Image 1 (cartoon, helix red, strand yellow):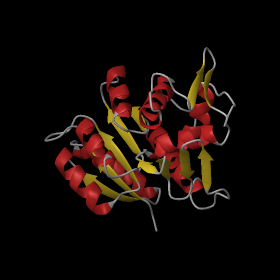
Image 2 (cartoon, rainbow, N blue to C red):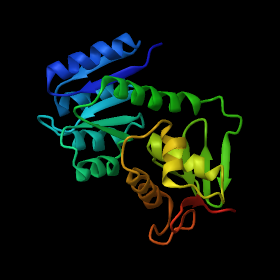
Image 3 (cartoon, helix red, strand yellow):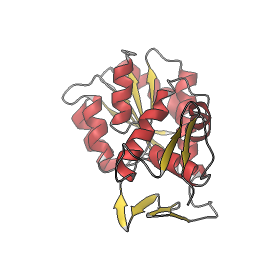
Length: 229
């Protein structure tokens, strides 16, 4: 069954060209032209990935991203024409997995779509290890569930992937560039602060006190690592 991709943009020519190219790659493309329609279709169709423009009528992309994230963990790639860092960071804060700035090359966009979907496929039920338990945390690698002291915590796909990568290599320090390569899974064109934002979101969810973390630690001047048991 072909993966479903929801394309959300209020400019029909952009939707048309994205649909044409994604369909050629074998994807099933859904269309939405405003924020309210995007939320409705996302909840109804449960797409495998969402391409989401920021500037939308009725509800903007940030609002859509936030609402979708409350119920879904599929990768979200934000499309922005502004290219302003504040927009990109805000999108990541709200749960987006990636962003790409207009105008973009179709080759780059297709590569990002494939990379995000490939990461989901590779992290599915083929994992030999199903559970990771460290202190009060338990990661179920097959169902993508995280529990802390038995209580479930909601993580986005990218947050879970980053936590899994670090937790399975506890004690090893990784640079931001290395984490982008390993967790995002391709030659990333964005800012390495993407990692910082995702780490901060993870700490806010996982740590008792995000300002004084005990799980996800920083090695000053080098990068991040997960504490050993």
